[in-house]
Image (tube, rainbow, N blue to C red; front, top):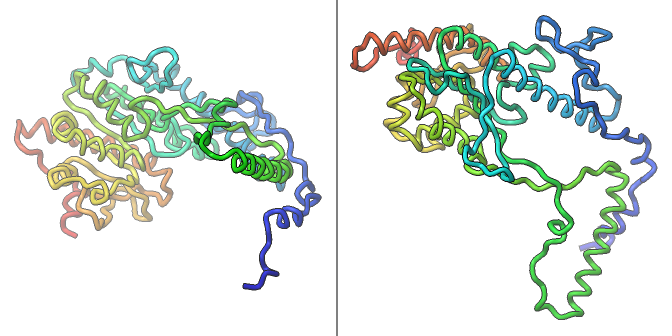
Length: 392
């Protein structure tokens, strides 16, 4: 091997053009903590607009500073999350319920939202599960809330209509799985016990680690002048993943509710969480759930090892509105032997829940009518799309 091509880390660092890295000083990563501070507000149409110019949100607020712009967008997103929480309580009159229900004061915890009659409504209960990512309870897609409007990006239309039609409502919060706290000095310095190592070897290792850290910090100072504090994630007991959260809420709330008919609306990864719930609580779900509306669900009955009886139940009781160029409710062929798939009337994944909104409520109404008219017998086919699906 030609040694001329071997470059040490020290040589590499010495060749970095620090002037180039420092060409643009990044502004402080300090942002307002209110919509008013950002000079934005939602208008009467639920659209986010600048309070002075009336213009939509601008991501590239500072040219050529993508990282700063991204941090600004994320800071606004956190405000949006709190704003939607407020709407759930003030406009929809839902109450916040903390989980785990037996958490002690010092323990990390999350929360869900429920209507006042969620546990006592004897007839109908609707359960909403969003997808993965930064979204939290009450949201379908943050990007839609910021760039489109509240109707398309939040679950508010579902909740309001559900309440109008006599449903109790439970809104899950499957991405709130942990809290982040700053690492203490002790945590950062934690290392495997090396008391048995010879003193000379220990000294060499310490010196090497100090030199490496010195070089890394020297470079990091210029590459990332506003290095964020290191944090550690403390997971919430029995709610450390979307799947765990769905099972926990089922065990402690949904299964304990008085509703004879439970309906699920699950978007994207929320569909996977529902299938996992069904695998873990098959008999209970079959006994309690009347229909499930999935919107561009990413579940996979093979990878999740859903049994034959689950797949058969899903074919009879579920429908997946998927992103497609076809008109709304048009049957879409599937390679998987699970529930029927129909078009959501949009090719945009994040819009599938909003575009299929009227069809989903019709699906639930028809499912309930079919169950009522069956008089204890197996429910007949519930949608014309199902027939076309089987004819393929």
